[in-house]
Length: 367
Image (cartoon, rainbow, N blue to C red; front, top):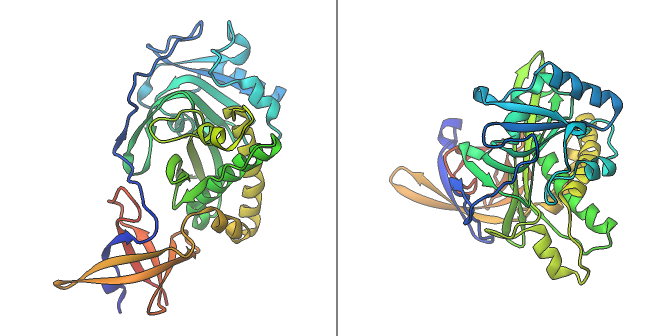
């Protein structure tokens, strides 16, 4: 079979798991409300509050503010404050900067924080200002109303969601597509670590390839990674959304925890974020220096698809032919590795059009 003949569009029907389609636009069935802090007018501009873990990082924050360095796409109005300039503490349910910094013990990631009570998109903040920000900068928002998803989907996220984006750099472009899997794994393992640290039952969040997070069959989060190539390096911006404390429209971590535990305990966004960066820093070091294969075993224990049998429908001239394939894992380039009942190995690519990666795939025969 030639490469041209093998590259055909397939529709894939899942024979085991029930897959949930992501909507084009995701809205919540109630009005989002926000009470601004003193010196913050969210209606006229987006406010960014800067804070560093160390004195040196706080000096960077001062420089960024003094030089009016930070911008938003489209030249949207932005005001910048240092954490020390807040006239009063944020609202009770706002992100607690001190709690987060007190829990953080990394050497690079997450040490420089940008927090906003309300933003169009955390991902746009870090990607638009990539060259001005310290390596590993994280941006967190309490409310995000123009979040970015796959295929330019728009997401509206209210309070109770952990919404953040951070920066990293890579030199080997061949492994850049695998970064999202490292991020996904770090999130799931961080949640387990926080539960274990607090003596709680394990909340077993699973990874749905390539970038969704599922809990008890319902979506609770997702990951978006983008990159640009400059000065012989790939500038990667990773965005994550995780539903920690909002049960609508599906479920959240604390709702499941309440069912599992007799202890009245609430997972916090701050503790999960700090645990995430500790996990990611460790996993990323292994990934960069030894390759993704060092993390594959743990990844396959966490994702939903090992041994998953699916039926593919492929049009051959005027006939529709069905073939059964079994997902084995990931290829070296980050796509799905599958084996057919004819013992032929295939690499499965998304077609770029389907809302669900498992509804439209391109199959490439592997020699």
